[in-house]
Image (cartoon, rainbow, N blue to C red):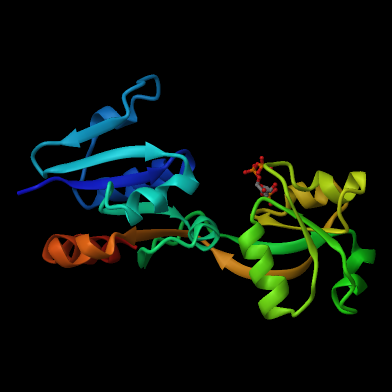
Length: 211
Ligand code: PRP
């Protein structure tokens, strides 16, 4: 039996994924050691391998077949646009992609004005404004703390993830429009899906039973 390889998006998502896997009897003790600099972890009994990667790299590993299976946020799947099968909504990591800004920026979204939109997600933003709203906008790519953009006058609005809403609230910003709901998803390499069909199907069935 060959190894089935999992790529997990680093951070809280990976911790929640490992917790879920434990519930269906898939364990990887050495992965829990936060101080370890090891990159890949093996469960010899089940012939499984796990590695942690930066979220946006997970769909890349899965598209190229370097990982058979990946767990990553829906935001990353949409943004990266890789050729992978999305097979399961894991439910956790639930949040939403929103257009946010000061309340008085709301009319700028209804009059088809050429506004600036700052975001870490230029592809999602482009798709939403061009294909859903049919509004031409200037998209400014940022790498974090997106909420700063309207505060310092870089952009009129932002497209960003809202989880609890605390960041918006503490900075006097509001949700102006909701783009889509998000949560952790399991993705599979299309060839692995065919070649390892029964193993992957049975794993999916076990996980579904737990969710
Ligand atoms: C994310 C997101 C928001 C915030 C939303 O940022 O980009 O800024 O969390 O969470 P809340 O609604 O619960 O306040 P993250 O902490 O990942 O850091 P970043 O700003 O560097 O992207």
